[in-house]
Length: 299
Image 1 (tube, rainbow, N blue to C red):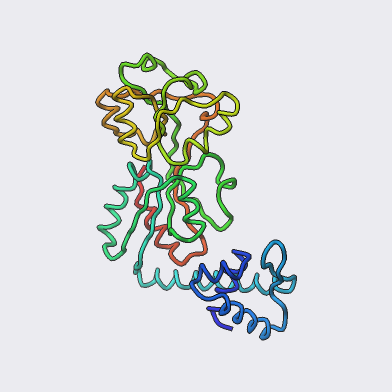
Image 2: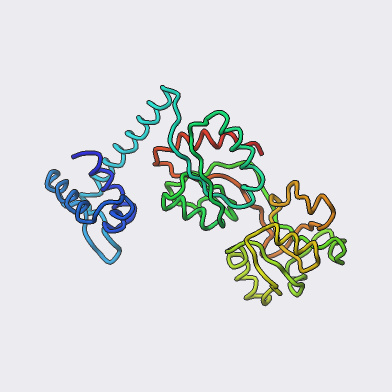
């Protein structure tokens, strides 16, 4: 028995598939299959069985696998402790982030972190909320910076930790400065659905508006773009109105210059707060570095 075999075991449990486990670990399926067979021979029990639900542990296997996961967890804790004792941080930090955090809190945090830890290579990719969560779930990103629409438990897997940035947001409609809507104190989406909309984001519109449109009919969408500056420019020129989180409007030059006006949205389906924070896998070896990076956020 060796740690490589234990890692194979853990990946099969998480993916319920030897083929997917092999792909994630960048080894051949036959290598994993042979490794598990050797473990089963060594332990004298059958660890997995195949079913319509995938490759799942046997009753005997569950007992052994529980112990294996404990060993791997303690191993990661030991690695972190050793790293802590030597006060050394190294490696690479891959971050996936939603635009609202990328445009506001992340640049300052990254600048301060880079000064203290220039040896850490940080790479960042901007994407929609659901894609960020998927990147972290699939271990393609070490840290995800997201907005949660509801409770953490409903959105995240058990092995994913959520670190709150202690920042909440709401939804606003932005309109041209000379629009009749600019004088409103608050608006409901159903009251303005006939106005021309320019929608920001790839999946934002689809994920939040499907139920609304079933009940009230479709919005009058002129175009969509993943470029927030294009959207705000279009609104300022009177092309249409748009929807933004309040976080994305912090220190906004269009808003501060009076070219657009922001009005709070109330009522269904945007009558809830957004919670902003970071997510990461609790079982990855980089978790200590991730927690250190999150300390640099000031919101």
